[in-house]
Length: 96
Image (cartoon, rainbow, N blue to C red; front, side, top):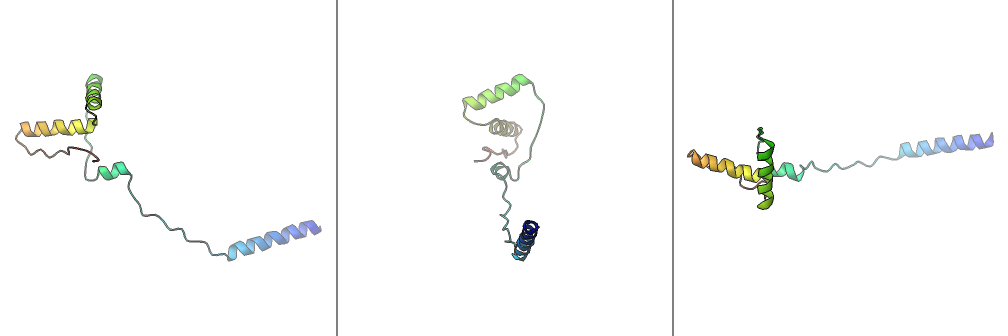
């Protein structure tokens, strides 16, 4: 019985001590966007369907030229805009 009483007393003492201690307020870090999201700020995604061969060729060119498929597609958009006498407003490098 003495062991039971001492365990019970210790538990009460411990719970009283933990309830008296003020919790440390956790400072929340300001929300920061991941690097990719920051690079795409103000941009919109355009999706379209093409053949697997065209997709593979685009990616091969990107590898050969040490660039990204997105940068090549923006270059293509600017060529289209120029051909149609429109301002070349597509981003030239994404994330740089």
